[in-house]
Length: 192
Length: 192
DNA sequence: AGGTCAGACGCGAATCCTTCGCATTAGGCT
DNA sequence: AGCCTAATGCGAAGGATTCGCGTCTGACCT
Image (cartoon, rainbow over all chains, first blue to last red; front, side, top):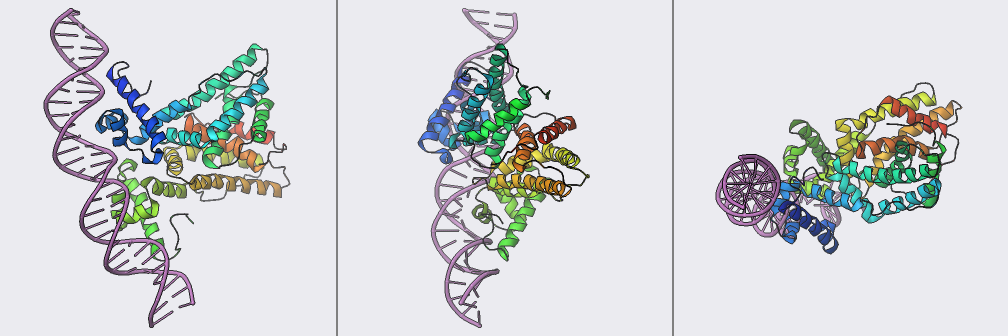
């Protein structure tokens, strides 16, 4: 699943990975994110620091892995009976989650320790999957659906850009404008 | 100029900052970015490591400061005689610069060591200034110009999102589509 | 089923980075 | 010209990180 963290899917390697990830989550809640160190995490996980360094190479890469897991959506997007309503609701929820203090931290962590861009791509895939589910459902209703690429460009990209580069309030008025823009050019071809 | 790096504008503080920044640029070219360490930079700059730690607090924050300076545009956007041509040319150039290996590194560095979001905001401001210049020029010609916020959402955000999250080729065909989308909804109000 | 082997882990030492207190010095200000 | 704040240099102490070596797990083959 992870390029660096899983060469042998079962057995001890998997247990170590799970244990270390859990230690990160626990300690993050207990001592705060700033106080996290590799030796501390390793001690809590019951492994030696060298193991963590060898598997993840770096505290940042470890935090990146954990952050990506936390950004994984836990449920398919809610069904509100129509494409516009589904998109509007999903976008509001997405903006809220990502613009929270925790969300911003996870996004930054995921981007931060990620030499191969693999974790960042996974974040984008999560959003794309959610949007695709909304579109598939809408197509099942017979609605015309926009291109997935266009939705990423028009909905997700502006939100992420603002979160990362220019802290601004992502009010529902704003997300509604984004949805309107997305549906406005629903028919235009916009492949990658 | 920098929140942390300049309390006393002139004199030794300024010399130290300049010297350290220069050392970062030199060493980055000589030994590579991965091999950069605070003691190494400090030695090259002729200061003690403690000075660097006190001023910047962290290697990442120092790299962030240097990266932001490198992302500053060195010239106003070129004049191609019309809004569409100006935007198209600027967007192509922006995509090329930011999507280069160096560009991606600088963007990540700028985002990376930036607790206050100040450096990231400055990156966004650079793009906004450039776009504003294009718009002001177009308005001088009597052309209808889109909102600056809309341009950031439609042009800059998708490019940055793709660069950071999903490596994809930012061909001119793609940037042209972005420009077309930006001008398509030129009249719609899109403040905030 | 038993054996083999590559890869992962634990351990410990050496190295390097990072932090901190204290003395010194530069430069702004009156 | 003299004071006073703040930045810097220096050196020691405390962690973090790397690395080599021996051990063990578990996947794969016969």
